[in-house]
Figure (cartoon, rainbow, N blue to C red):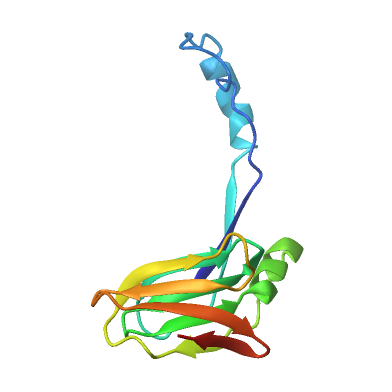
Length: 142
């Protein structure tokens, strides 16, 4: 499971312009090398392959993943996000803060409620849909 951050992004000389010929293209090539975009990432092990990932809109560091093992995991990736922002070389490995094993089959449908923080739906390939409600220390799954 990767948390990624793009930085050093700049407008290009063509942003906002129509299809114009670039007469100064060769003159600007040397200066463009100084402004290379950079991608940094932090990784944490995930149990099994990842079918789908969704972040909670109200708290982007809370992430749900659907594993090919048929389990749905909730993660708190705040430490990984902070490590990216501080430029730390290493971040602690995250572990799921909650795991649901109620689905009988793997699936792909995951979505957080845009209106109620923590409320969540998961749907498996066998048409089973589960509603998750936040409770202290985790979720109740119906």
